[in-house]
Length: 162
Image (cartoon, rainbow, N blue to C red; front, top):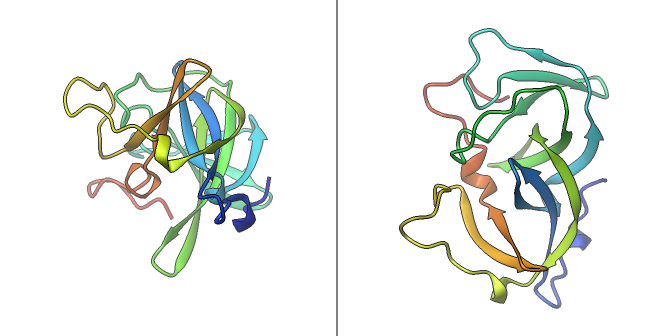
């Protein structure tokens, strides 16, 4: 899946999002940031790496940090060799940085109407508000919309992601 600005429908205001599963929850990532989805590939643990990007992977000859966002989302870390990898191109200033997200699975591409986005409650939500922009309903389930700008930002105490 290649990134394509036409996948966000400017005329209707709908945002196309890739729905991924993390620890039994559904999360939406804007398709404009998705470079491709790949099945599990070998990963290399980085000694002394922080919890955000503990591995590196080889994506078509490029070394890419593999991010496990579960700790940031107050979930137990991923332990196992299963899952799917979502390769992202995230803007930072005038540049684009590639990184990969380890997901339990990829479900579908969904149109999200910004008018249907519900704010998270100020108290009681298990996910930190700085990492989740809001939620929408899909077939009775809650889909959380990831705030990509903050979720993938490295901790000041961790090595850079690029």
